[in-house]
Amino acid sequence: MSATQRLSLATLPTVPAGLRPPVDPRALRPRIVHLGIGAFHRAHQALATQTAEAAHGGGWGIAGVTQRSRAVVDALRPQDGLYSFTERRPEGPATGVVGAVTEVLHAADDSARLTGLLASADVTVVTLTVTEKGYRRDPAGGGLALEDPLVRADLEGAAPATVVGQLAAGLRARLRASGAPLSVVSCDNMAGNGAVLRRLVRDFVAASAWDERDRLLDWMTGSVAFPATVVDRIVPATTDADRETAARALGVADEGAVTGEPFTQWVLQDIFATDRPRWEEAGARFVADVAPYQSAKLRLLNGAHSALAYRGLAEGCETVADVLATPWGEAAVRAYCAEAAQSLPPAEGLDLAGYIDSLVVRFANPAMHHRIRQIAMDGSRKIPERWLAPLRELRAAGRDTPELVAALAAWARVTRDHPLDDPEAEALRRAWDARPPRDALRRLLSLLGAGDLADDTSLVASVAAELPSGARTR
Image 1 (cartoon, helix red, strand yellow):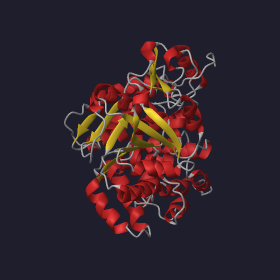
Image 2 (cartoon, rainbow, N blue to C red):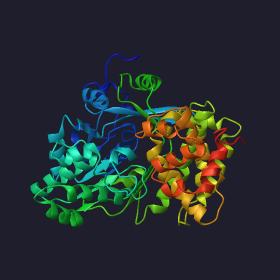
Image 3 (cartoon, rainbow, N blue to C red):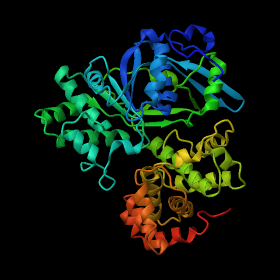
């Protein structure tokens, strides 16, 4: 690291004035609790909160909570919550310090503080970015996986280890303390993420043995909002080179540095229960129904990302830009999106052709270095919404689905040849013990919660036909 001092409130005055936060971090207090304070939150919602605070005030600070790893705590606590965001522009990086995070907690180590914050009437918003697997859903029914060992332990009275358990315990404490209304905002890539989270928290409370269980469920109905959202910004994993870039710009070391692309989007369902930051000052859009935006983002951006990741891994690529630099990369994006877009209903204000054009530009940004192994991880949780929902709808409508079939084949090949970080990694590997390959594919589809597709002989045969090369060459 080229800089010897570390970013903090004490060293902030040494940072070039134009790179300091537009708000005074000392003037903020925790009014938002964020569960899952990883790179994406710091490059998206925290930035938007800082912009809203600069425009309207309100003292909107964020108490960020990490669920498992203590790396974020170790990085940000010595820095008083400060970190830098570097926008990876094609013409060169642009860095600035973000001061919206007032404290950083570890869910297990600081469980009492977390529950206290969730109970506080001064906290009016909870946001989440815990990835799909963090919700502990039952893949078959979509509700809370009540047999999950961590969920069972939470229900038996342990300090909550799951985000759903943490929210339920916090809401219970909030009801006891004041009953103040609260908005709980999922910012993860799940269709209907607000309704999903509402169901999971209610499932947890209903399964509890709490004396006030029924009263808590009634209170939640009228006082706790779960807006649906769509979030979009490509945020690659931070590298040593990124930290060096930040240090050169700031003049101090930053162990919490994050980076992201220039593009950002945030669409929120306008059903908040109480006060919130004026995120519209940062370009957020508040709408009655986020579903059209959500479907377009999940099925086009996220779906294309996954398709490129699995095919790219099979063909030796390392980054999304590497894939777009191949002779087939751009054509693959456009063909996949053209097919998946047929599953989207018409929506006012959505220019699908323009959106697909923007994806090509974003994916090809040479400054991003977005590693496809990062995108490919946790496929068993991502693929059902990104690929299987449009696949079912298009096949039911009698449409051909060669791109989605090829994507499934590329994923299947990667589960066989390139094991990845996935909550079902061992089961995915064992699926290939089956012979012939069609039986392995049926097992893989069943692991995705898609028994109906596993029983679709024509689909399985089509995917199997793609397996020798993993995906078609163009």
